[in-house]
Image (cartoon, rainbow, N blue to C red; front, side):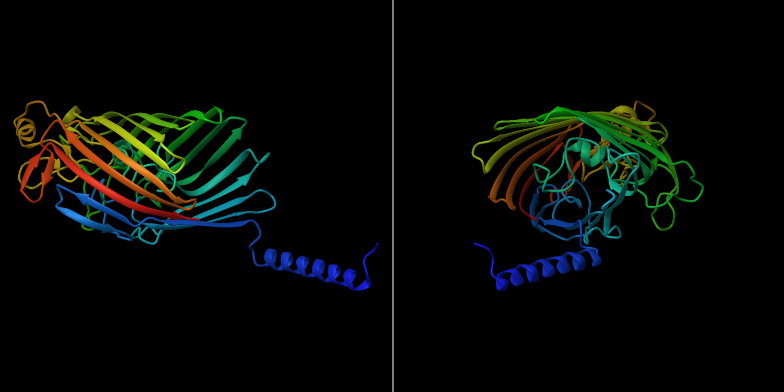
Length: 395
């Protein structure tokens, strides 16, 4: 039995309307457009800071317990054209003067696996992601916070095939433009290999100029000079069944950036996170971090020139540098020895639904010198305690 004339007219009208909607969608530039985002209101108790409360959309950042990587809101626009060119724009309104956290264009060359990339991209080192949707715990590991850049601005290549990918750029490190007198960009790179879907390894590095706070600081508080840094790290993951594993080994050096004021900063560190799903919704997590930073009084990537104004060369918020005794020894011409740092976190992550998580974390930070400043008791000590809770909602 065939269709009646009225039924045929209805079908034709539907086809015409559908084609008109598709044309309007494409004309408006919405074809191939994807919008995603998240927000994560966060509660933090920091013992040494004598501070407890919610953190959300703040533009004031002081240390590992108060960073732009949690307690924020972000929206991302991704568009792919018919020829395979992709555009990515990520906005994070809380991030002070840096509302645009990423803006990258990727253009296919000989094929869609070989691409020219240009713009601003978040650092791709390590096994932890910057955003709270992909990261397991609330805070980040010591290597993430103190030994790696935040972002790169430049151009390069993204080459992938089968189970491997290479990304490399010539770029400014943590800077939207090169300062006066600086003409050489940094070389940044990352290689990934994943022979099977549940495990993979990679390495990344940076060779180039970065802020050195031992150098001159101008009237606006900006670093007026930079020095060469060399960073290298190896990381990997294994996720199978109820278990998840991630780990990283890092090494770095920065010329004339040690806490003794004259020598090169050198450090090496490790971090690992293990997770276990008790149920499909509930995951238990434990993370351990360590940084050896005793050489030349300490000093990490763009973290140096510590001075509390009372003769102690320490960053009392983050537990870096030298305590009073080590500072006095250094000033007296003896060996300048910085504090080694470690941290342990225990966490729970619970899925309220496919697009909302609750996160809980207890974190213990320690050092082998008295470099953590206790605001309430007005004294330096070797450790700090932190408790956090966050609601992560994403789409």
